[in-house]
Amino acid sequence: MSTDNKKEQSQESLTYAQAGVDITAGNRAVELMKSAVKSTFRREVLTDIGGFGGLFALDIKKYEEPVLVSGTDGVGTKLRVAMMMDRHDSIGIDCVAMCVNDILVQGAEPLFFLDYLAVGKLEPEKVAAIVGGVAEGCRQAGCALIGGETAEMPGFYAEDDYDIAGFTVGVVDRSRIINGSTIRPGDLLIALPSSGIHSNGYSLARKVFFDHAGYTVDTYLPQLGKTVGEELLTPTRIYATVVKKLLEGASVKGMAHITGGGITENLPRILPKGMRAAVELGRWPALPVFSTIKSLGNVAEAEMLRTFNCGLGYIIVVAPEEVGKVSALMNEMNETFYTIGVIESIPENEEAAPEVYYRGTFPWA
Image (cartoon, rainbow, N blue to C red; front, side):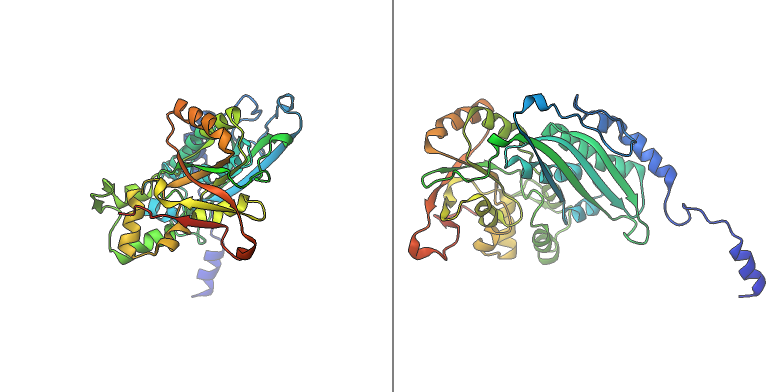
């Protein structure tokens, strides 16, 4: 290169847009998402969209001793399915669900939510669709979307790639915190169905469907009644409304959100020392997606149970005398539920035994 050309190049005026970050597109994305975000606002929200921080005025008169409960999570490799389908309107629901369902287990009411979205290239309509899903999740959970961040990161993410994470804060009175400490032998396990895989185990699910079976997102499977992509993008269920009603009308000892690790790994997180759960495998029906994964991938039952929710997204522990109240509340809400097992003491000679063990046969086929 000649000296003159170097001099000419050095005098070129570069812009942020030339570097891959389009501020104008970012502003358009904000305009497109405004109405969806505002639709989630509760009366406690004091700020509008665009501030440096979201303000939320907690009504402390409602509580004797309010305790804030926080949670954060993402969506994992389910995002890859959304990218493969170029469909982004429901992935935000998953992000909210993974955060909100976690704080519910301690008896918290979700108050507000924030999201962080990082993209390779900012496409306003795509960003608005993603955030629209976040807003829908917040409406289902009853919490306000009071803030967020969209970061355009060229050279870090591929042009069509993105990642999303969420953060939620809820509140519970100290005296009403649910931590599993009162769980005793004889208490019963009440389970709520999942909507599908939810947002866990997707590395295995994608390997089975796409790498092993050779399917695409457009492959229609009769046993699913939909395409592979449609099944895998089914939004994670949010349990806030059901749990709120149960806590108002029944005494609950413990709750578990069944995420990655399945029942096998998540239920022990709420069990007191010396307690274990006996789970009856035949007490709830198999969802076709799990039977399909097991069959296509020749996945062992134990591996299925410690990777996926296998049809149950939420488990509640109650004393036997509370079952009538729980049943009445569930029926009032037209909610499907299953009594799937019982709490037991771990015998002294079985101290090394697993905290969850399974009885019976699961109806995979």
